[in-house]
Image (cartoon, rainbow, N blue to C red; front, side, top):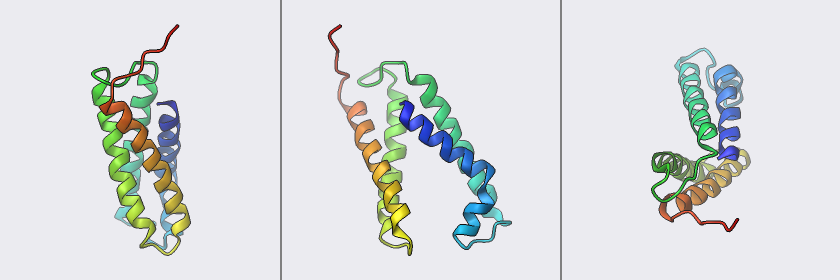
Amino acid sequence: MAVSSVLMAVSGSVLVFFPGYLLKYSDADPNGVFSLILQLLGGLYFAFAMLNWTAKANLIGGIYSRPVAIANFTHFMIGGLALSKGAFIVKDALPVGAVAIVYVVLALIFGKITFWPPQKTKA
């Protein structure tokens, strides 16, 4: 939870505060509607980071904190599929592929958390 929270907080902050630089990098108009869309997306990522950060101490899996687990699994699964597809169709595939790998790994982890009961540890 903490890892996904930090990754989303950093991504969200970059999208909120620096959408123009990202749009320039991708050869898009930094003053258009895409800047607003990226800022909204950054707000979404940052909100998701806050959700994960506040839930990091909770037992997650099975029936415990199920909405948090399902939301994370859904986000990372859909993002992983989209980024994996995108890695094959963009010119500069290395950064997209690297992010796709991170998303797929987190999707697998949250899939396990969502669909299998939590493991009890011996104290």
